[in-house]
Length: 294
Image (cartoon, rainbow, N blue to C red; front, side):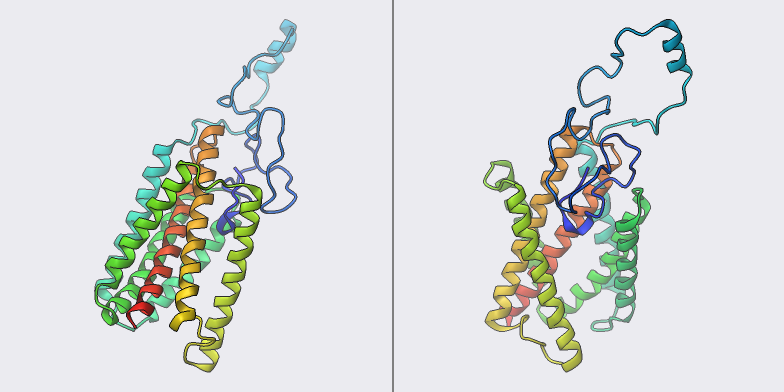
């Protein structure tokens, strides 16, 4: 299943081209799917039709078919919403547990170990991104490493702004619930135009805040001033909206995957995408609330 979420869309949710309908030619990483006979999961025995209808075959032809080796790995199950919920709960559970450990063990404003965890998390993310096969172990390892880094940062923010972490968590849950409700009632429709516009804005946002962080690192202070004052509030709100945009892409990919009979292992990539989007929203809310406190 080709994902439109730029966080993990090099080859979409699936890394294994042996499944029918996966890994087909694309015009670009976010190109809309073109209609095709049988749908994107053609060849999937769960996708409809009679996969055993072979027409008029002679006994010799049938015998040859029975004796032939399998064409590829057997697809043993389909992704369901329950699969996605369970694996997302596992991923987020490890993330929260690791964050709690960092909160209790890492001294405030001592980000050495947390920084190493963040770098390691980035490395694991890149392996997941470029790996052809889905690895639940790598996804869970990413959750642990990223959770440790975010937990240390959250402790520092909460030390400076008492109660801000609880507010950011509640805000993240509110954004998730509101976005899911808007998506389910049809207020948000994930169209190719919607995807292109949102991704363009997200890329511009990432470039801008990266330049700001580089300027702050070189010159000190707040760099270009994108994380303080009135401009910081605007940037924070835009960041939260981009996180909600990522959530809508996640919801759309999960819905399509369930409807079209994606392999069960794809639920791990769905959980990974949801975790990335929720962490993005949480961090943007944490920054925004700290600016408002100032």
